[in-house]
Length: 395
Image (cartoon, rainbow, N blue to C red):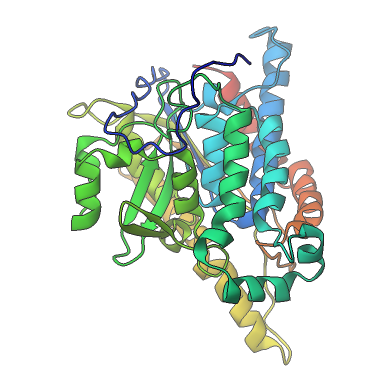
């Protein structure tokens, strides 16, 4: 990677010059391809594994058919037109589309990122923090301010950007970037409950928020100048786990408060793939990735605790509810002969049985990865094959 003698660009992008956005994609004849990542803390590793299985199969299919002789890992940004993510799902979308990683790179970085973000520090030691995890989290929440608690995320994201961008690129720290794939991360306005999509492309004129303060920031163009670190902190500011992000006088909570599964925001944003005033694009297929789904049995004297666990797993996370809503929409479009009635919808979400994983504990990742691999080799095998063949067609 080349270096520059010029001073490195500022981490923040609050200057009054808007970074140029990427060109609109040239859509394939069969229509657009959309990609969605749930939020799930460290459990996001499961989603990356699932997409990696598909992209590895895409490479095998292309090599076997003669479609391509390229032996390198396939990049999702070359196969999908728009990606969405929330919380750590937003970080995955950022890595794959804004920083243009392949899935193997993303998997390696995500494992490291999750440990950096979610391993608490006790007396300056991550080892002690992981050893005495729960009391460390309580002590840090009591005795330290928001900036201290958000520092691991900030440092982790900056480290990734430094490694996967060119130091001489004046827009390297901006979320909006001329060479980016099209993606966005969901954030939530804390005091009004409105969603804000933080995009790697300029906010369309007809997508301005409704809340007055948020609308003012958007219309001023500031939202198009947000830096990657601020955007990452905004989408990841999950109550309990990480502090809220304050940017331009606005306080953001994690996008998962409203859109932990951002499939509805992704579908609504398909309009961004064409110029304003043009008909909406035809969509070929939509892929949605969960971070592992648990079935909680409600019996015995622990029924009340099981009920609470199910509430946290299914309703606060709201991922499966969004999946069912979108599945119903697809069925209605087919029945009413909508222009997108032919759209293919895939939802991959590893079955974790009755095991409930703490989304803030990096130590659960090996066990979750094992279950995800079993899902890849079993129940998901047919869908992975079908998805890979659709992607490999390149039409």
